[in-house]
Structure formats: structure tokens, C-alpha cells
Length: 378
Ligand code: ATP
Image (tube, rainbow, N blue to C red; front, side, top):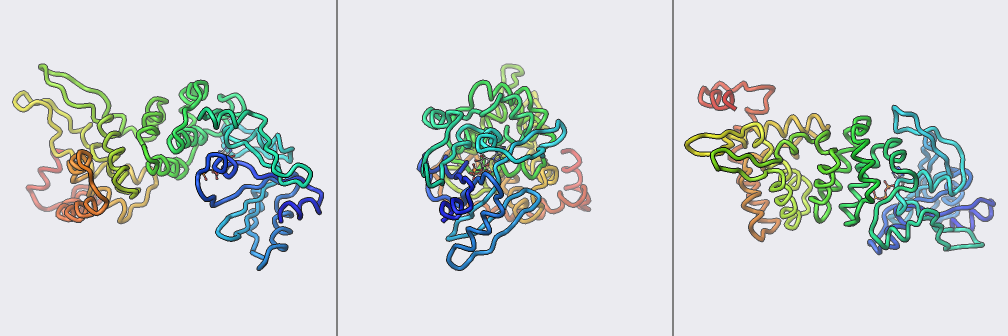
């Protein structure tokens, strides 16, 4: 359909990006297909919709020059081929019309720049100016342009590189990794919502530790979730050591990921020990202690969610509950647990909710002197 409409209109069209990548990797059913039109994406979308049975609605995003049609559980996204250039202080590019190759150049990674022709003369031909196929075969995340430019232009790509490396179990090319480390501070121009979207995807991957190790290695984690990097390191006093709570956390997250697909339980596993950094103390009698780190941790979850613009709703309370019971994910990590077993434990956590609610009210406002003392001390 697209092909015949486009050829009637005399414009070239291509399928590009995630669909082509996932099709070649055999990654299951697509949900969206991106189509580049060398001409007006909006015009072609309207004409394609008119030619489809039931004439589906066209959602036009004029500011972006894109249009979307929903057809048979698929979202068809049409965009005019474009050339982009960037200003230093924004990830919003200056856009002008361009060729297919200009459009491929603006893509983040070579594996996301692959295009399939929909044109009658060369239908199905793969257009791969940046050796994306070879990177797919060798499982490499690499940028089409010089990586320093790619990441500095749009620093969200740093998160995307790490997210794709985690989801696909690909390696990030060495020069890319170096560029991410060098430009890490640029992440500050990205909205928290965008960052969190990528963190969700990393957490929902089969082995989230791949992503968190890369975030740590590049220095991004220290900027976005310093509560976690604060857990790293082992101290020794009088011959006594404690475990490295950062690497331990990543192990727990991977273990939880084997047991459940629940995003918030995975967040809870990630944050289950964050109270340990501020509560760490060496006691001559008992050695290393993290006294009441669960309470401190639960409060830190609230602040972290607020800062990262994560929803301050039931889901946050759920994460806090799990953090309050923070020994549980550790126990769970050592067993072969099922989703329902975890849910039972979460249910048990109800016992702590009253404490938790007091803790989260603006500040420590409890009238119970015993509790007041405990909170003050922590
Ligand atoms: P997924 O659906 O798993 O997120 P995807 O590749 O389809 O994967 P989208 O975010 O839907 O990801 O993006 C579609 C395509 O748009 C990408 O394949 C890529 O070519 C391009 N793209 C998306 N975001 C960027 C970006 N920040 N910089 C450059 N190109 C991008």
C-alpha cells in the first residue's frame, strides 16, 4: 500500500530504524514501524490512510513534521527525510529537508540507521551506508558519525546506547564508551522523565546489571543516581571488612529479574540498600553496622522518586515497603523464588506501613517519643 501510494506520488519511501533492526535480529512482533519519506511524511500518511480499509485516522504532529496511523495493532509513523544540526544548549535540532542518507546520518546508532526500500524499482533493498549489518553481526553499538558529536548533540543517546547494550547484550564500541565518559556532564540537559524512561528499560532487561555497570563505568550513574554509587567500596578497620554494597545490589537486581517482570519490584531491589551509605559506622564491639538503614533508605526512596519525577503514588509506597524489608530481596536472591512468593512477602510488608507513613509526612512529625528518638538518630 505505502509502496504504491508513494510511487503514484513520485516520492521515495523507506522503512527505517528499530523495525529493520529487530526484523534482522528476529526479535518478535513489531509495535511500531518508522517510515521515512523523501518529501512530506504528513501528505503521504494521509494518502496511505485514505487507501486503507476503514480509512484509519491520521494523527498529525505538525511541529515535528510527522504523522501516525494505527493499523492492525501497528503504529505506522511517517516522517519526511531530514537533515539536523544542533545548538550547544539543547537537544532540539535545527531541522531542514534532506535526503535518505541525511536522515540515516541523524540516527543514533549504525544498527538503528538501516533502511529498507519500499520503492517499486528496488523494493526490499537494504540501504546500509554505515555498516550497520556488520555491527549487528558483531553485536556492536556504534554511532554513524564521530561519537563525540553524536553524544554531545543529544546526550539522551548516552542512555540509549547503554539501554540497547543491555537489552540486546551488545558491546558499546570503545570510542563510544570513551565519548560517553568524556561528555557525561551533558546528561544534565536531558529531562528526568527521559532518563527515567531509559532506566525503566534497563531495569526491565533480562540482566539489568549490564546497564548499571556501564552507567557506573562511564560516570553517568554518579550524576543520575549518586545514592547508588555511594554504596561502592569496601572499607577495612581493625581487620574487619564489609561487603561492597553496590556490586551486591547489582547481583540482587539480576536475581530478582530472573524471578519477576514487575518493574517496581526491580526498582525496590535496586534501592534496597541505599540507606547503607549514610548509616555506615564502625563499632568497636560489633564491627561494621548499618543501624536502621531500612528506615533511612525508605525515606531516601521518597526523595529519589521526587527528584527523578517518578510517581509519588502507590508504586512508590510499594518500593518503600520493600526497602523497609530490605533484608528480604537479599534472602530472595539466594533462593529460587516465584513471583507469587515475592507478592506474599510484599503483603507481609504491610506491618511496616504505619512507620513508613509517619516517616514520609513532610518531616519527622510523629508524637511518639520513642519513634521521634529513633528518627532523629537516623
Ligand atoms: P525501541 O522501540 O525498542 O525503543 P527503537 O529503535 O524503535 O527501539 P525509538 O525510540 O522508537 O527506538 O526510535 C526509533 C528510531 O528513531 C531509532 O531506531 C533511531 O533510528 C531513531 N532515534 C530515536 N531516538 C533517537 C535519538 N535520540 N537520536 C538519534 N536517533 C534516534
